Image (cartoon, rainbow, N blue to C red; front, top):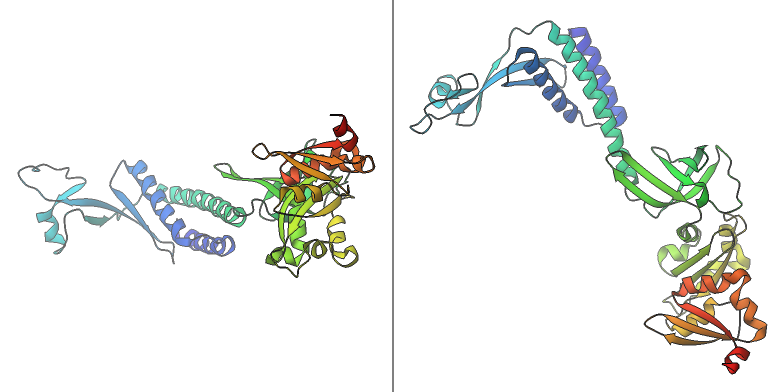
Length: 357
């Protein structure tokens, strides 16, 4: 490169380093390797290295010979790439075996300037891509199972694509809340259900129907969940219809259910506004599985629970006729959610049926 090209190149390099956060030394080292390889191919010489001045952009090429010690076992060497210790010390007094004697290449072909400029450009482009990829990976590597805010940028027949800033996420259309209408260009909250960092870059799979979406919304709205005063034990969700959440507190004076609901439902309503009409049942968790299952089957009352098989986690819930439909729920929704919440298989039995059995 001539002096004008060098000056322009270094100016552009400094601007990219500042803008993209690239380590300048990494770029310089890559340039040196590329320059040396270009000269090797151009001249057919193997022992070449390059030095690039990081301030001026000046490129200097050197051939080098490795210092070896000749003895009875090693009395021959390649005089193009090696030099004896005896001859090397005639040039540099304190040089040791394994070090190199460098000789600057004074005559560089004019064509090499074009090769150098092209190589430098390719390296910069490559390093910018690598730097941006690394920055994106660093920013998102700990976002698995987190709630993010993005902008709906486009869609196809199966997916929405969400602009998350430095990256885009994929929101499958079967992972939105049933019945909700999404508008391109609008801001949207999404849950990261899967995150992969691979050779092809970053893949972020998003969801709004995952139970984790409700969990993170609650944690954002309820300070007691964030600071650990109230613990969210489990979540069961039928997206678009109903969720059940189980909460408890280690502090006797704290009402965990009340903390979630808030005064006149103020807290839970802020979450419900983001769920397209979905309801949330707040259940008190209990270490006793019988009491926990009774609570989980709310709004059904007067439920008698028997643990049928602790190992297989099977339970029977006995209800009267009045509470039977409430315990089961529309299309079995209530008992299904209660089973997921408690991790017990729950069989609903009417008292009358049990007498007959």
